[in-house]
Image (tube, rainbow, N blue to C red; front, side, top):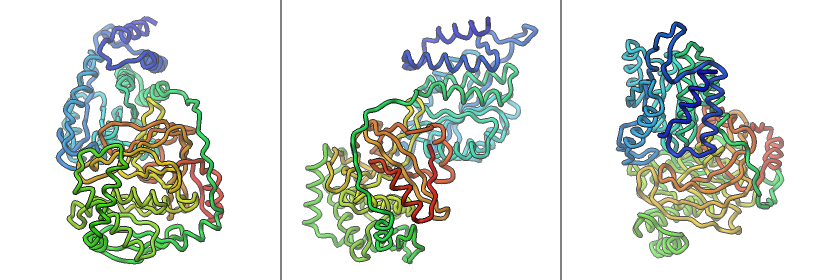
Length: 528
């Protein structure tokens, strides 16, 4: 009891926790009390049973990233300075844990991680905090192999893709020494870090992992009760939908090769070269391009850091893609946009063109992702043209939210004849180049998020209530915030098997999706 009283007083006296709200403070104390229930912890003069003072808890912090200032396009964005964020994390942890020793270091990948682990073998490191700052740097995989207790944290809108995919992999293999934090609140990181003392004071690594999970669950708000706007959908029957899909086509622009590919969900797929859409772009009618560019200028809330010439080339790309689709009798197109642009194969981003196509009831899909484009096409067809929003999701447990983020989005989420929502034209976020869309998507609607796997004949499914739009300048421009319906924790488990992309539709599509899956002999997998 004495230890607990000292511990709770120590929490109360901490004045340096950033932005601790009353609810946040209660969550911190509640979660830490859960740790206390597992093992006695003392942050003040820790000692063993003989009264001899114990050494400090030594924690290696690894920042998994390309470099302290980002020099290439990626999340969060080119030119992003990680130094202030890393300094804030270091300083906050040092102030809140005077009996810990934090040893921060940066690591770009597996080679750096292995060198650090070799060095740490002689350094008496008690545990690791790995912060995923950029998406795909493989650092945490090496660190968990040490067997030491590991906390894996997401720098949201920076490392979230890798964090979700890697965490799902760890959960799938039941990695026994890893706890994770997916929160925008510093308090939640503080509580997780406090759990390292469990092992230092004689507890097991399993106790540590259990405590971090308990802390995360305790700090996650209860499910909200929201007024959901009516949003009726008149969907096609499975037979009508499959008939239309079999006579549709997806054009995939991956590189300079052309071929007819296997059908996806009975949708014809044809690969065409960059040169075909680039040629169509170069031949687009200048007056028509000017008309479309001026329409975009007039329709947008504002145009931010995008000049008129960029709008003009984007309009020409839209016209070029639409002409190519007409020539191939296609209803959808998906382009390896970054590879094409950076490789000099295309000379305008297709983002605004995709935006316009989706507003018209056609499909423009990002990154030559054929499965996501087929998902967009299938369920847009089913719903009479409602556009799917392909995204790179982020999960924030502190708000009980999933944030669907991408630089392409329709602003007619209820279909071509439905009400439009406001949008901005901005640069593509990762490289601050070209033109893309920040769509201010409507709140208080049920949404349905899907992804197909033709090889497994499965449709991944979850639903969420739209709650607003995150204005954070990091990562993709459009960020729809929503509260998942069901088990938020379950959402951490599917990303390694399904990849990062998801496709979100406005409306409750549960019944028509299940009927469609049954009709084609597929299975619906509920991920929440």
